[in-house]
Length: 221
Image (cartoon, rainbow, N blue to C red; front, side, top):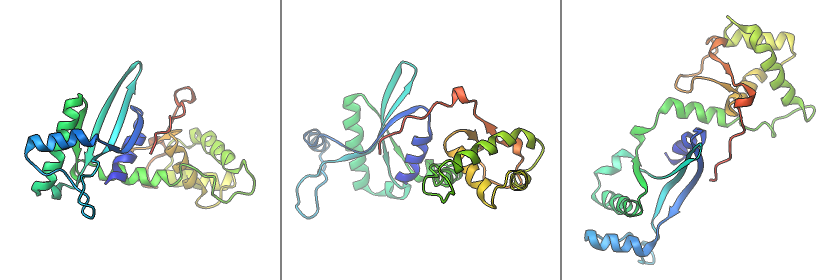
């Protein structure tokens, strides 16, 4: 689940930074637990109070504005457990005191098809480890793909791939690799909420205009 949410956050243009397992001040969480009349979470071996963490600290930015939000991730099935709810309440109160927007994300909140597509694209975000006869091979393949795309109006994606194989010398499978790479790097767009199908129309692919396709700032893990 945490990986799924990370993929969604990492894809969002509104997110400028992601920090995982962000540590909370133990003295503060101890005070909150005492105020609630509940046990502070402990290490089961040493029996000492642990440093609690929030799964994701997220920086959001647009223009000159920015915001910090905190998100915890839990399976919905665990929310029936009193102890889980106590821990989440400690976390919620901690961020409330600090004036930070906190929220709980469950598996029911995560869009399954979008995440599946993002995983699929992410595998081809970098082609550096792909076999190539020369260093510029995949860059040239990407250039050929984009140059030929306007000629494919009215074709299915499968037909377009066959065109690339017959006119540009693409090996079988290379066109799909390039499509995934271009989409993963936001040089073309695909509908992430729909299962990818080779029978889709090429018109469903949209080339991102270069001057609006600024390189995304890499988010920290």
